[in-house]
Amino acid sequence: NFLSLKAAPPTKDWTEVSVRPSYEGTVVRAVAQLEETLSKQMEMLFEAELKRVQQYAVDVTLDPDTAHPDLILSDDGKQVYCGDVKKKLPDNPERFYPSLCVLGKQSLSSGRFYFEVQVKEKTNWDLGVARESINRKGEITLRPQNGYWTIRLRNGNEYRALAGPSVRLSLKSRPQKVGVFVDYEEGLVSFYDVDAAALIYSFTDCSFTEKLYPYLSPGFNDDGENSAPLIICPVNQTD
Image (cartoon, rainbow, N blue to C red; front, side, top):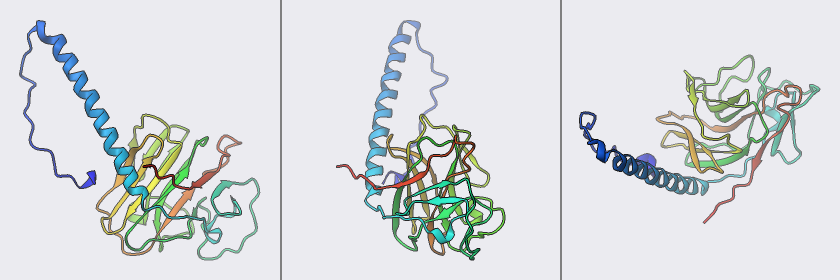
C-alpha cells in the first residue's frame, strides 16, 4: 500500500552546482529520461493501488427515502438526475431538503468499501461519503467537520476537494468514472479517476465514529447542460 510507505530519505540540494555548457544537452536529456521513468513508475504504482482497492467493491443502490423531491431515481436505484417537476413526497426525517442530494442504502461502520460512479457528460456534481447523523434539512456545508467527505465539479472543469477550506484540484483530464474508497479503521477516504488509474484526492487521518453512507448530488439540470445522470457502475476488476 503506497499510502503507508515511509518518508523518502533526505536529498541533497544541487542548486549551487554548475554544469559546463558542453554537458548541458546531456544533462537535460538525462533529466527528461528520469522524469519519464519516474512518471511510468508512478502510473504503475497507482494502477496497482486501484486494483487493490477494487477488491472491496460493494453493490451500492440509492435510497429513495433520502432523495430530494426534485431528484429522479431509476427503478434499479443505480441512476439519479434532477427532474423538471418536484414530486410530492413525505418530508420524512431521512430526506434531504432543500439540498439536492441522496444517500446510498449500504453503510459502513468497519472495514473497507469501494464503489464507482459514472460522471461523464456532466458539468456539476458532488460525490463522496457522509456520516449517518448529518443534518438533512436546511442548507448544508460539505466538509469533514459536518460529516461529509466529498469532491465536486463545477462549471465543467472546476474540481475541488471539500476539505474545509476547499482544495482546488488540478487534473490532467476530466474523469469519466470516479472510484470512492473508504478504509474505516485507517480514517481514509480516497477518490480515483478509474479510467486513468490515477488518485484524485485523499482525506487522511479522519475520525469515524458512526455509519458512513455513499453521498451523491447530480446538481441542477442547468437547461439541459447538466441533464446526464450520475450512474453507479459495476466494478470491473482487471487482472
